Image 1: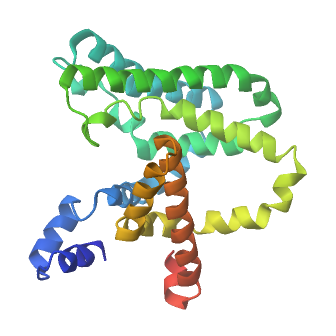
Image 2 (image 1 turned 45 degrees about the vertical axis):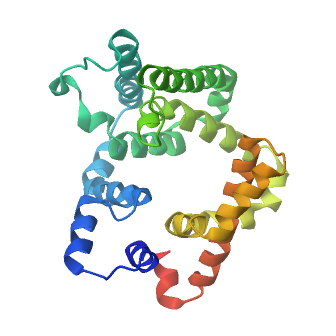
Length: 262
């Protein structure tokens, strides 16, 4: 769909060879990287499921510690010391253990099925303190790299974007799980939360098509021109894109075949 929209907007012709090449390499659309990772995760799932169900809690903590060290501490330290001139030998990195398709599913399983939320709530404040520090480090390193290289593109500025997302995900998940168990407000909003949750895959697939429409691009320009803070304007713009994608997904889900997949 993204490929067809692109060639139609550019006045080109559909060529199956070009399409298959882009599909294989992953250059149909940048946002579709998630689908490739998801397929890799599904391939690994039978082995991963068996392992995590029999894993002791101490080994989960060990895994998460390794993930923070290799994905966060090491890249930050390397860049501070050598500004990208030197990196550690790749053979030393336990890539299979700290890859996204292993680390984050294991984190999700542990937080949902192993962690006692009543005990975890005592760690919320220290956890958020560490989380805030990790966000500041990621932002600071991004600024530092831009200052060193003079390059600030979408791809080049994301080197430290995911350095400490394990801490970000953990803090948010535990906080939301604790709050939803304490407040009746969430119960009243439950059906709406489930509705949006059931449409997340469709929102993900559609959001770029919505974002690239001229009227949506014009909306962001208008919000910024109206005097609104740039960051607030972008957040509001993203919310509009999400809501439009959500409504479209709801409509598509009413179509028997489409609804099964999205």
